[in-house]
Length: 134
Image (tube, rainbow, N blue to C red):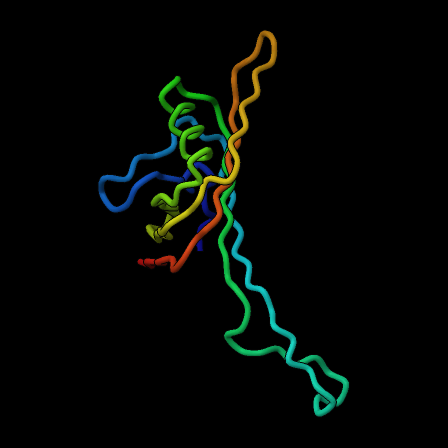
């Protein structure tokens, strides 16, 4: 199996064919977490027992890159302040797609003297996500 290219992991706003790639990204990261529910009792012989299908699963996405114009900044600031749930899409280089509803929980902008402006954002999933594999 070939090694995946980092530049092929794309974060997009929207869904389907109308989704738009977040501009000027340099890196994208996602984490899938599943909380556990401890169901250990005296009948467990001293071994932990986890409740199947218990807890909460979530996906966190973070991305950073170069700030690409006022429209991008204004859009992300508005989404963060509104605490809205919006559609986002992660596309992998093998054609797999993860999409669903996310809340933009933080948007940071940095500008150093004599340097470019950069951004960092964090998204948290809400509700069911769809993973489409090829």
